[in-house]
Image 1 (cartoon, rainbow, N blue to C red):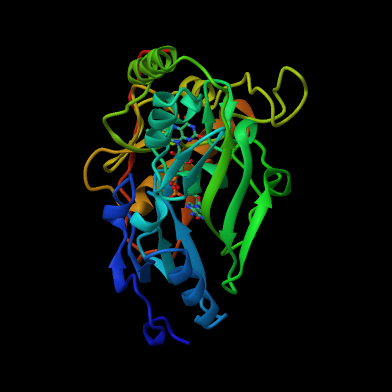
Image 2 (spheres, protein in one colour; image 1 turned 60 degrees about the horizontal axis):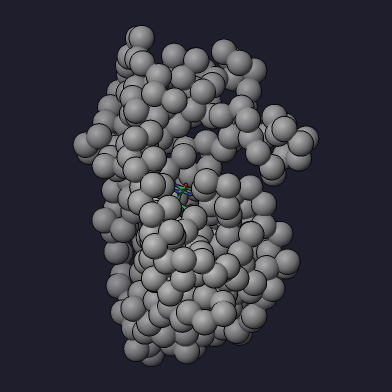
Length: 324
Ligand SMILES: Cc1cc2nc3c(=O)[nH]c(=O)nc-3n(C[C@H](O)[C@H](O)[C@H](O)COP(=O)(O)OP(=O)(O)OC[C@H]3O[C@@H](n4cnc5c(N)ncnc54)[C@H](O)[C@@H]3O)c2cc1C
């Protein structure tokens, strides 16, 4: 069936602009945006949906450039029916629960998921991206997820089936995570709250947390791990190779490599997705020329190109200072 022929309890919106739903504030319309009321509503919708229509689950858009032509098919965005957080010996969180909220609630109950505190996404996106920082990742804590597949069937998948690696998971396309269960060590709430405050301060000191960004633009180059494991520590930092290629603060229209942290691509005004992506590609080209390193995007770029338009020229900021 076509999306508008399926009876749902949630909200189905045709031609829904996605710019307001992404952290970079760019993106054309989804053909359809579906916000299911709960897991049953989602399962019924997917079971009835014409299998030829693509489905894209979206979190809070903190790791996405949605292109200017928008997204074909149905974008699924989970909301209130998916944000419950239950804390016992383990922590179970709905896929729409914000990472920061989960970390705070867990800490209040004396459970350590502090690494989630400064990641601006929601739990579904955190699992999909194996999000992490300050040495801890989803992979270190995840027990299992509950997800609904493209045919509307519910699955409980153990973490081991997701092949979690550096900013990577192998979740089948179109499968929507509805909740995740984490193991979280018991600890003193006051200590956990202090640790989270410290992490927030560290972020504010080194990253443009007040700007519109999608976090780290490129993965740290693989093959430079201290242990030889590509998914382990990455001692060669993407920000450093961008910096030494002279690209800190580089601008293309309203798209800019942050002067504060050169691996953060920011929208300083009315940048289009095309400008942001073109600046990122220019950075990749110049880093390859300068260092022989092929940077890989960490930000996911999704959707259709917008109409062709002339791009503004690249402006470089000579002599910008390092902060790290
Ligand atoms: C200022 C800033 C700092 C950041 N710092 C970090 C950091 O320290 N560490 C880090 O790992 N990341 C960081 N990020 C990136 C980003 O926050 C994470 O990747 C986050 O996990 C993305 O979650 P999201 O809900 O925004 O997902 P989205 O960006 O909306 O989507 C990302 C991917 O997840 C998929 N997805 C989302 N929800 C679901 C679901 N329910 N089911 C199936 N698939 C789903 C989407 O299809 C897409 O493929 C940062 C971003 C910003 C803006």
